[in-house]
Image (tube, rainbow, N blue to C red; front, side, top):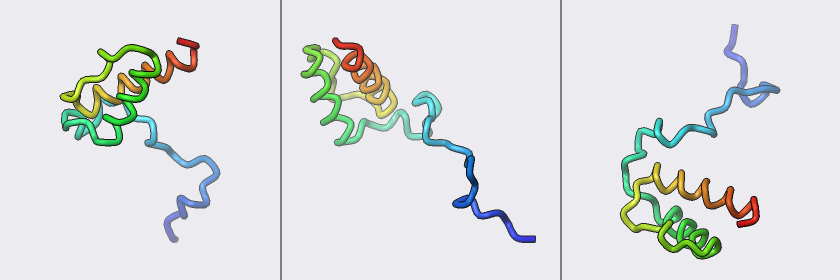
Length: 75
């Protein structure tokens, strides 16, 4: 018997959504892409204090999610 091909599974398990608190590398410094996106979002919602250069990957992700949600909600 061969292992099933996960590419053919109509309902594959997903790990694309993972709480930043559970990230192995969550305490690492935020990436350049995160920094750029967070800076842009903080300017769009007129809240420059939402950006800080010393954030971890996990904290940057949480702030990005928060700011994106606020933009979707209209402010």
